[in-house]
Figure 1 (cartoon, rainbow, N blue to C red):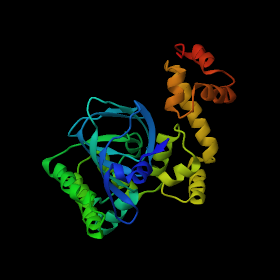
Figure 2 (cartoon, helix red, strand yellow):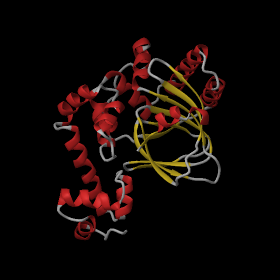
Figure 3 (cartoon, helix red, strand yellow):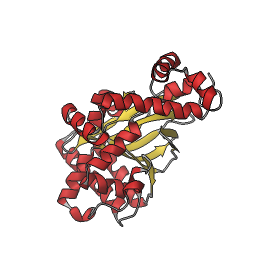
Figure 4 (spheres, rainbow, N blue to C red):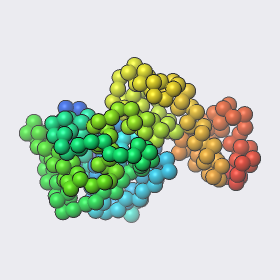
Length: 297
């Protein structure tokens, strides 16, 4: 999978962009250069995005969202499959940020997120892609940040950090019982539940342990210790089991072998079939015939 943050940073000539904050957070005027009709991507940073024009579909697990012009989206860090629409260029203004940036704001102004919301189960089941209620104020924050994306100066980076904070405050005021508010509250004041949620939402993707540690904003050694404490096994074993488990579900629902292979990050259908048979003793087609509609090629 392609790390979209690294792709943007490594191709700075394609996008107006500027970092801000203490952790390499990023503001981008993103005009999508991707030409593939679908692509697996991931990011170790969350996104707050204003869609200027065009359409793109985002898929993660059971969540599917087809974006629309004028939407404000919150997309949590992790893995996604992008489905491209080429009727017109896709352009979005994006703040990419670590959980730490939110925690720093909460430490400074705890009244913004006074307490963890009720309902761990509801939090755990919330979708990784959320359409937020927009307003002229919120749109104006995105648009007024644009001049700073063309200026790499220290003054610009400071201004972008202030714009990011202004955006968060605008989205949280008045305090709404929405997914963004609950997520920011949990990550500011809890460590285990957001970690478990992140792992469960992304275990079926083709992540390495190192990539998951980066997404969790931990060193590799700290990640392995924390993972075993809260997930009860090693990351490698757990990831393998998650991918096969998702493959069983998709095959049972009649998904094509080639589609399952792509969505779960295998290099091709043959590689997926080999891994699936090694884990289950059955080929994907044989498994699908036994429990549900026949898998299609």
